[in-house]
Image 1: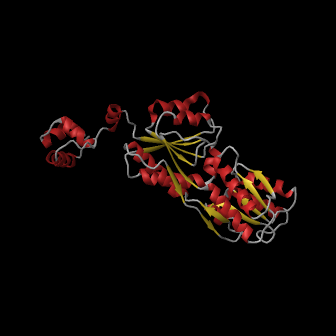
Image 2: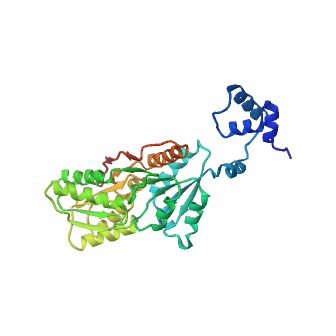
Image 3: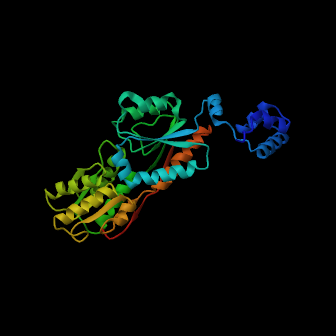
Length: 331
């Protein structure tokens, strides 16, 4: 077995002290250009690989970041929203020294996850799909740098937010339906415990009020396909809308299935607009008109903001990414 070069061997080869090699490895700027060049050459010649475990002990850094998703695993693995977010995060972390730890749970009995995060298991955290009732997430965010994907109930000075303007997006989707001449417009909202859901509904109501219209119906789902179908059936039990704004593509696909089950045509009888522009929007029949939120870019930006914070920089506390309406056959 070939033995690994040690930091002492690098120091000897470079003609510098062990502490100088350590400063170079850890990115310190307090090294002369001559010494820096000598150490870098010795590292290359000896194929030296730093002992990251020892560096972590010395610096109290783990070189790990947590993605905290306070949902059950069925929701996480069943909704393409999360796949896009994770892909964007890992793309950004790929150019760093950090690895991603995925923590998925709708609750934290025994405070196992909370203790892991609070006791130094990771250097920072990214939090998505949070609910106002998620007290254990609040306890985690007290302890380390955090970037929220979506507006939290309250934002501390040490926390950062990457989001879209959900109120404006809900307004744009609803206004599009109004412009099509639809007047009996319902909405299938997300859970009232999620501020994104509340904001999309606010935009829906604001657009209707501006047009002198009242909501035909407002029913909430849980962002799953089945809840979208059930919500559509509840709406139809009170009459027939001519359009529905649905707060996610998965729920919209479920709603379309329920509408067809009731003998209604989409979009001729009921126009449907979704939200996300996930792969579900294209697989729906008919393909969904939907509000595109940049999920991959959101993941990228969340990771970039946290890395910036961990370097000691001060990024903007709130980043709002753009949305756009994508018109397809469902409306």
